[in-house]
Image (tube, rainbow, N blue to C red; front, side, top):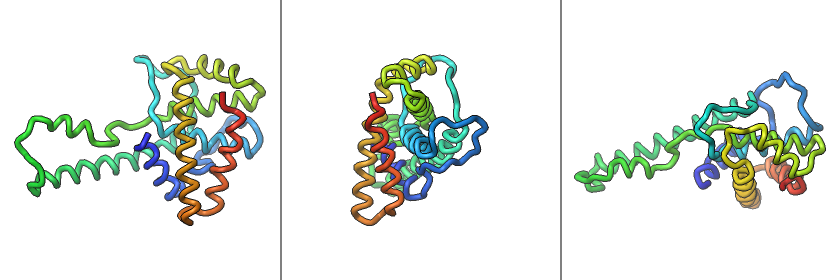
Length: 202
């Protein structure tokens, strides 16, 4: 979750983690404009987290906008990974660590941003919130989402983790706003989405 939080904060700084669309949609969006923007922001934030998937091909809806957003995420995370690898390499080249050792693979595995994240949890979040907009209860929306994403091991657990991550991200956004690091518009965007979400979680 720490890796995802760092990525989120950088994407906020680059004005990538927003509620503005990246790609034109050819299907009729659900809800009013405010609801659509909140879903965009929330689903993008949750897409930064990994999700537990079964060992089978992906079954479930996709979203062009989330896939575009994920390309920014991958570019940023891979640059972080490269930075960590280069720093580690410099330790060895400059004789700052013991070179004769047997834990090279462990060192590699311990570095952050080892694997790319996909948009699965963002898709799950989007589907769940859209069912809420359609008038389903939280329990009904969760059941519908579980049925729509049979590849996921536990939609409920992953969404709970995602909402916990959102809470931590919002706390960070509040700190950034208080220190005049982000604009009032950015703060209000996250604050409004959080207020909207509170009555729609299960």
